[in-house]
Length: 298
Image 1: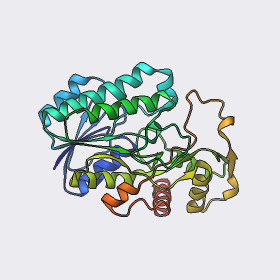
Image 2: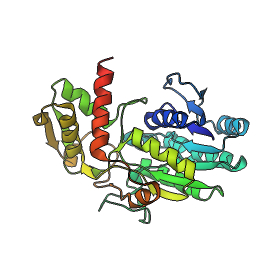
Image 3: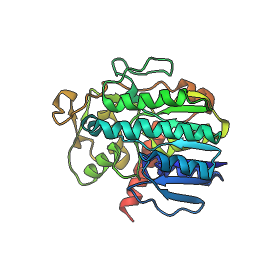
């Protein structure tokens, strides 16, 4: 299958490109600022997805059988401060992707977020009504609705707190790991709950979704835990002192511009039923720790 991946050099995109190539697919992947590593079987295209005419032209020229839209402006505070950019990247670019996918009759996978929910209760299922509390979540929700109304076969995939190595910015897990191995303290929230999603496992799940053409919305994520518990488990996997992980609370986060959901954890029952067992969080954290150690030893 020929697959076009937007944001192919990002945290998720880089893992997905590798997963697709390893499964024998032909891949065309876009990048913008973050230059990707060379990989056999991948055609890299430098592209600003906010320039819709370039994006649509690429899809028309390549005529992929499937498109995975990973590219997004994910800086939550940045979206609050620069709403025009957030709308251009997360909404208008998604409109272009959906329009182009329909034009070439391609199956479309749109990567959304747990931040479409308000976080008042957690363990959200696909049938629950979204209610974003920040502009980032709003733009991603509008992107979902564009995809749903696009008149093309699609899947909306919602992960939560994606972590791993690779991409243009460090994930929370990599930030924690770097501080811990230096013997530095890490403050992590005890009152914010997410479903940390390992980029490698998420990429494998999306590859399976592409191959079986799952339709509709699917929550693909790890187990529910607080940021504090997540940091403790990273420390344990790295063999670092757990005492370096210190409790923090949302009320102490004075530098935040945008409001965050208190508990945006996801119920992944539907994904497990459709895709089989996946996202063992203990295994994911162990693999992450091993990859991190390997990277430091390079």
